[in-house]
Length: 151
Length: 272
Image (cartoon, chains in turn blue, brown):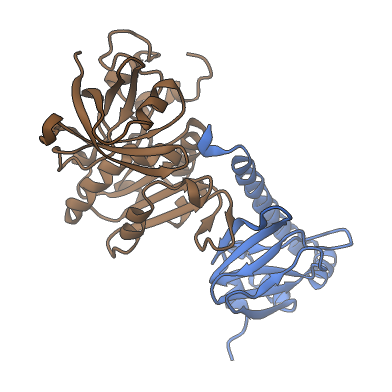
């Protein structure tokens, strides 16, 4: 049976991570599939997963009483979804819905954080990647907020 | 400098505030308005004023002159309100075109934001007509919402082609939208192009172009491979009035399409 490490290694978020770190991550990882229309997460629910998207498309939505659900971001293979929350409680802030059949690696966040606490090298490697991901998110969110096409 | 009177043959509403007008000669004669992709005309709404507007039609069909106009001011509003059969003054074409004739053999990546697709559409027509001469052709187009997309039917037709990849994204959308949501720059990473053999054509609002150029440079393109359209402040269209002077350039005469390496020292200047 194929192990999960090669799939982890193939995801852009974990690119370049050493085999020993991948081995540890694999202890917190599982595969999951979502049919079109199925929610990966709902706002306010406890956030125990950090998703690495391998296939498919996911709409990140926010519910507005006036407009109903509004898609604010679309994710696809190579993207990640979730928070590596370091302080409890961990909650989702948005809904995320599969637009097509979506395959992900689901990382259990409490397990992951436990591993990072025990192994600071792994923690640093993950934090470097997560910090870069957050920086990109901040940049694109700022652009999105400033009404790029109307300026 | 004397405008030619052309007659509105057809008006299409593209979005809530943007219209596409097809123009021909009075009496239904061909407009006979030869132009290169990226050039613009001065459109004169009689009694109101003149405004520079890019040509958005097919350069291989000079019999119909097509302009896409957004209602943003007094003159553009007057142009947008014209009905079939009404007359408009046109002088041009003016300005430097997109370098489509110099790009054969290259991959071409086209990045458009909002109304910026209008001046790029003639380049797309040209590239698709001469399709075998080019490598991969990718169009990346961003708008505020699905309702703000120009040329929706045409975009859908283009998406159906096997030899042309079209990526469309919006800032936000209702849940019936199945396309991308996010900024246009994010899609550059999904485009297929070989950086050393790529020509990039970019048109949109200033901030969008700035971040797009940064992203393209980050993906390995050199400044001389990137072309931007800097349409702004154009008044006379022939480099006489100085209204559009931008450092050492007159945008109407030296541009509006510039190779990025030639203008990069001026591109980000807040005051010129």
